[in-house]
Length: 142
Image (cartoon, rainbow, N blue to C red; front, side, top):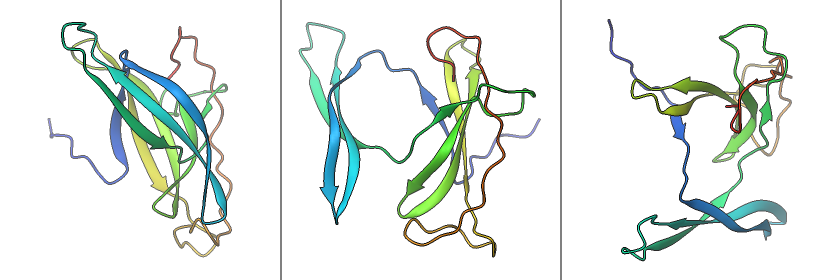
């Protein structure tokens, strides 16, 4: 069996039980309002008394796939912008060997009609035909 090699745009996201979002909203940068959230991490061990804050910027809106017809289709998807480039985000609900659930991520550059990677400022992006899917799962459908 060949070993998995992570490519640009691939990743994994795990559930985090020690993080809350105490503040979220918009901040104006370069004439454009961007959406941000302050994340608060608090160690679950009260003896440690450790708290950390992080500012996170939204890179796009994600949608739960409510019309999934094949297992290979994403459970969560959407267009995102990272470093001024447009990508299609695909999230797949998975379970690791340890039994821990996670979201496998695959992001692909969006291209314009000429095959150029879409630029966040000036692009004519092709519509994606990713179907929307309904997950029958509990709290986190992705």
